[in-house]
Amino acid sequence: MISDRVVTARVIRTAVPAEAEALTALHARARATYYPDGVPDDGTDWLAVWRAAVARPDGHVLCAVEDGRVVALASFRTPEGAPARTVKLFQFHVDPDLWRSGVGTSLHGACVEQWRADGKRTAALDVHVDNLRAQAFYGRLGWTADPQEPGAHHLRMTFALAGE
Image (cartoon, rainbow, N blue to C red):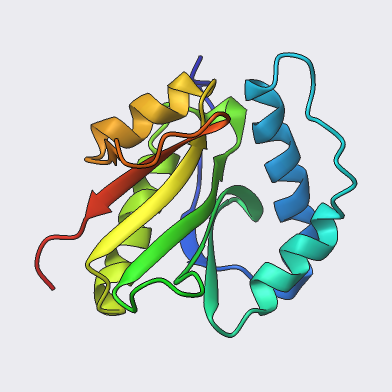
């Protein structure tokens, strides 16, 4: 349900190191929605992962900030061994309280703009097979399932960037 709250400002920008804790917390909240038995504890230090993602010289973390609070995030880069004109969206999360409010669509648009500016032609992502809501979101934005990449836990999706 979309709330009647008033948003005074939404900014989409590059995340900064001081926001690693906010990114980690948002990531955990969003992931919890598609693990019916709870998020598996695989020992990953997600705070360290987000600090490293923000610091990567070959990567990019965008965040949507509303009224001084990180409400969505996207982490992407060209994976090692991939063609230079390919980008992989490793993480894309929106605060569950803001689903269907336009935040995710705005953040996705900013990602596409950045990818085009970087000369990328193709984007890829892996989405959890049980996360049908996210699969539908990406499908509405033009992503398609990659039939060549069946997976037990994740579905590979691709996105063609038209024009530069």
